[in-house]
Image (tube, rainbow, N blue to C red; front, top):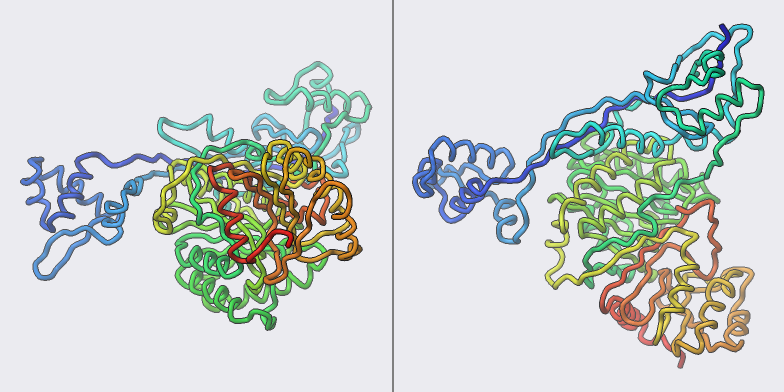
Length: 590
């Protein structure tokens, strides 16, 4: 019997599902009783008029979660720990209790239509024998480009979600147990001709099988170079606080140090460029950051470091390796240092970490965390509230999912996103902010969505539009000046702030562009040099991004090459405009 052999990849992994439940009123009452007066389980049972056995069981659970401890002086007594007091005084929910179990996944990916089938129905063989009369298809030219973590991650989550018990959610995929191996799916040709296909085969894959046995070139699904995350473009209801806008080099240095110092499990950094260890520019500032990372790995925090420089990959890979070697000298275990030397080839910049208290912080914007001397004026946005932080973690996970060896970091980000997404606000927000929260909406902008967003802003604006770009280059006319000129009759105040011209553009070219009809002003900001990328309109809307709006044209085939955050919140644009005025004095034409 002749067979049809289809190239495929077999994937096995364990998906971790989590059951989470809160605390009972009895346990909370016991915690408050010990906060009021340290005593024993018997005394609390008597005061609350509950059975002693119930009180002892509750005390055991509270101690297991670090909320109670035994004091031996001046007399033995149970008392609330400092973290327990913080939960009560700051009004935060008590840490959830959770239980995890594993769901095994065994699936096969075929590159012709990018579909995934259960292993049992695929006819997969690791080393099949090809006999006379068999038909074997070759791997498509771009077939391997998309058999990536994200493909199997999506399937694994869908598979596990169908097997969840009451109260369970998908937490992450265990990277340590993930395995991938290439082989062949083997199907009898007679069965294919008779219309007998694997139970879960898609219609597109069935067409491929029919075409192959009939001697035709298989009709393939059109492949994309990168997937589009469903978070892109979706508006997320969240909250906003003024100090979530991180403005200035010094503010960025202090913010990353605060976040790294607060982390207890993982820190993920994606920086386009990386400074070498012998770089003297801004050495004291860089040393502060490097030493913060050293302290993190010395207490067991996992640091995942990525870079995205395409043009000078060897230079930055070498610098990242030097940083990794330095951190290994201080790490409590080698696995804490995860340095990815291959470039991710993206201009997006991210900082993400757990806050050590059940939440997470994600910072997205213009700052090259591992390269900057923190002299330039940077602008970034920190996401703290649960839904917003989960959105930022998810888009970062998708960005690095194509990176070889990044499975562990991707799993960490997905796990964090699933966890913080259940909370209204991360505890880092409680720790850092005292002001009131403002209701807001968040939208993620991928690279090719920036220009449409700017054109939409010119139609919505009524009083002002201010755009900021580190460089003004050849695309400045269609990307910045033309959209602003079109709003001449509607918006009286239209400005472009920039740091410096980019070749082949010179300052005289910028002056000539200003002189054209339209009344758009271009204002250089060089003390400090503007490196932040943004645009704002009226009083309530800002977009903070990694994209140089005036010098770069987005490639639709690389949507994750840049990332921007659109925040709509009362007074958000006014706050950012005031920060610019505080740093630069005047940002209007004299």
